[in-house]
Length: 419
Image 1 (cartoon, rainbow, N blue to C red):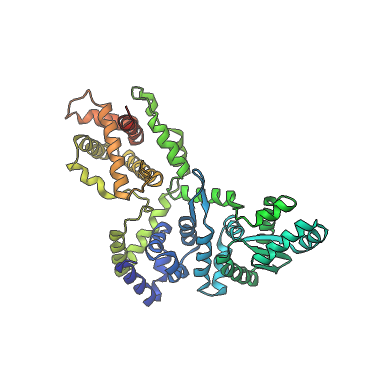
Image 2: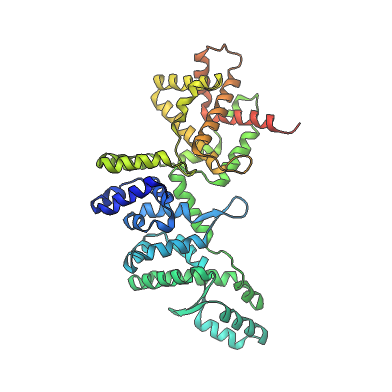
């Protein structure tokens, strides 16, 4: 934990009146604080959080890259979050659990538990062939299990067993119907997962994820609304960009992925909350600003201010910057739109990562976006004179930074391809 984070937490804990200021933070900004502290040590912060802030933290911390381009729920991180949640007491934990989308809660519980009907399990074992009954008995002997609310709960991850059961009991005391719904969904997922006979019991001995599809889609919708780009969309966009025809201006028109992204984006509402919290209390605002200066985590999904440095960059970068400044004078609304698209492209590179598989820092991703867009603009205005600012502005207005980026990406891909 960085020193400024310790100072911020101490300031918040020592001044309970500031809870309202924390709750006014933009959810992404709040998630940045939790990231700086670490999920395991963020109990005091999470106790102050709104439902929206909590959901943003979970969307960031509970998912990891699975097979292919799909992200998968991390059952271990879910169990850690339950442990942190329970630090605030059973009543507070139950309240937080009830605030979650049921798709996410069910997916998290199913990642920790197999859920079987008690009566059906008893009859099935009584009528089963000897080998199958023996295997079932072995499963129950080897795995942590509990009869609860008419079901047999079987652990899928021993490390997550205690917090999962404690959270279920806390939730049951507050909302028994919710627990019944969750167990029914987990039971359906377990039944769907298991084949009849011995293979079904062997499946219990192997950990597999269930009920993730709905939770994943729900998360993707929330993150799209907050300005994030999914890994699948980021890779698809870059693949499309690498195939951009160099000599066809029509190919630089807005692509379907970008069009869909901005159709779903509801970002402007997100910006207001953090501004009010900054002005409300100078010391808190100062600490938050210090934290922003120290953190360089890749998931800060906004365009860094590094664009101002391009005035000392290559001629192509200088040309792009001057075109953007001229656009701001001529059409402020269109200029704001182009900045939003630069931020989108930066988020896209942050999600996709470097070509060598490593992560970008936000400043690096922004610089790469500007470099590729500038190269695309230079290619489109190559026949113009170096000081033909009007030609660059006209091309920026005609194509937009996203089209210029795709062209620059294609030119870069051609250079990088083996001879």
